[in-house]
Image 1 (cartoon, one colour):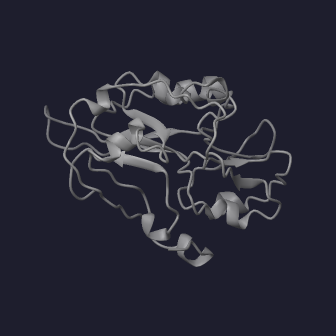
Image 2 (cartoon, one colour):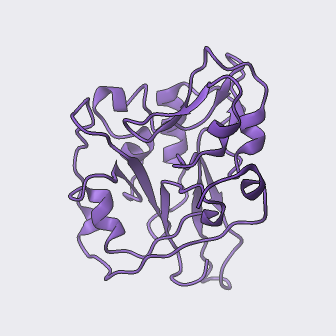
Image 3 (cartoon, helix red, strand yellow):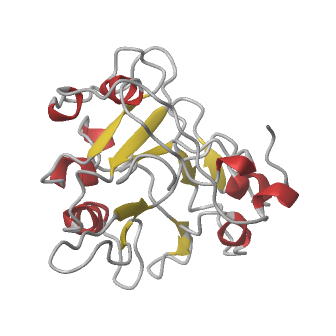
Length: 228
């Protein structure tokens, strides 16, 4: 399904599920990601486990610190749901809001200068800051509303999986490293043996607004299985 201007500007979100047998050790095993330059293209993706997230926002703090994100803007947000249940048995659902690193990225399609682009070697959607003219087309086109203007340099900005910071040093993204409950999994979707594929093959997951044809690379394990 292609992503046209018409379909990415339409309607509310949708979800897609893949089913599998729930794994027991998958989410508990953590491997160091060797993501320095290697032969073959990668396709980086991330999983946010809503059943493990406690809404502590350690991920947002780490992201801001490592990537020097100015006050007043954010590459990553943790959204808390309305209360579920009755006192004293009240629960909340925490979900991640950040760049989806779409395979068919609307922000890239509408950028008039080529500042917004998808790196074909990693699948990461990023910004050439020296090409950004601040037109705001990418901000308007993003169905997930996760882009912003960086007040420090005036260019479009967003999550890039810590490409210029942690990834450049062969480490996991700052949010993944800092999560105390291991609610985040990051890795290469093109690698059948990667941890992220192990989780995707053994958990129920969904993605936001897949009906738009964006093919997002941010997957979520729902707080409650079934309809989200």
